[in-house]
Image (cartoon, rainbow, N blue to C red; front, side, top):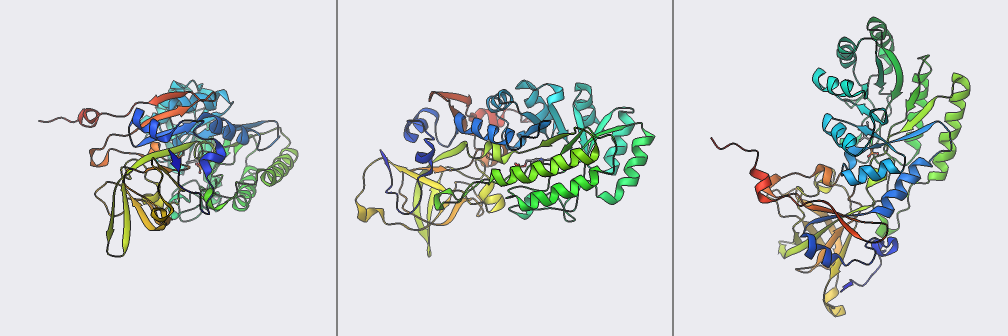
Length: 423
Ligand SMILES: *Cc1c(COP(=O)(O)O)cnc(C)c1O
């Protein structure tokens, strides 16, 4: 078996030694198609990148686990010295199951019930609330305790409207003009504001992130007893590697971040802790979805490759128009003439027109080809569903020594109906 002739694009998996000698075809024979495949080396390297993003001493990386909550990956993140940023009780359960201690978890909560707050409080997990009304709710049930607040500093940015989480047009955070009310509520319930955070959005390349840091630090000066400032996640990854897109320049970011951190530490007069909350940066590039081409057809002008990767398996292209590089693996050798690339849409097997993986790519695809959707480790499995009653795929991990490990079983058809009650 061999990959298609390279043409003008970069063979990303070969560059990364992603499969560590395993054949995608064999992986699919063993675990069925479609399949999530992760590479442990890459995951660990991304954890290290973030840990070392600054040399500022009192610094903590909270992995935003919603990007990928597989327990094995969470345990590895913990081994690498990361803490966890969670967004629900379900994620608290996952983080704790993977060994994170309550003081290594922060719950960045959005519109949660008093009951969900209590769930975290009883476990000793710090909550960051993101509205005046949630702060009131928190005060009533947890008088005299520590709390954090998510601000909306007015800065927002991301790769798609749906992932911008700062600025006027979003539901997140408390705007700084409410600081007087915040102070009243803190006093009323004897709450201690130990930290502030924000998160401006996803897939940011640096400039906007730094603009956000400046704004958040201005807010921080208005509170005297902070123990930490959490600058949020959103670090970009290159989704166009086949065309040579370069990774985030960590060196430039490091210098800028360190200068703001050190300056703040001096003027605030305290060795305050800084945190970040990367999700995508940690998990995206270590993961691939493998799928199989079941049919090729032309409707009108447009050629389609129909695969078993529907948006119940991988939702990002459908949800965000996201670009993901595609690699093709073919068993038999074909002559050059048969390998002519043409414009093609790669789609899934679901009953929705919006169900697609890649639009208008120049590729040569045939039935039974195996395709790889690259950079699928973040917001891949974690956004999958059972739509059309399709079982979610298995997840396998290629360990550092190259061995293969099943880290989530494929769902069965019975799993999908088991919670339903037929009266
Ligand atoms: C989703 C999220 C993150 C992580 O975002 P990435 O773009 O994956 O880095 C960080 N913080 C909060 C509060 C989030 O909701």
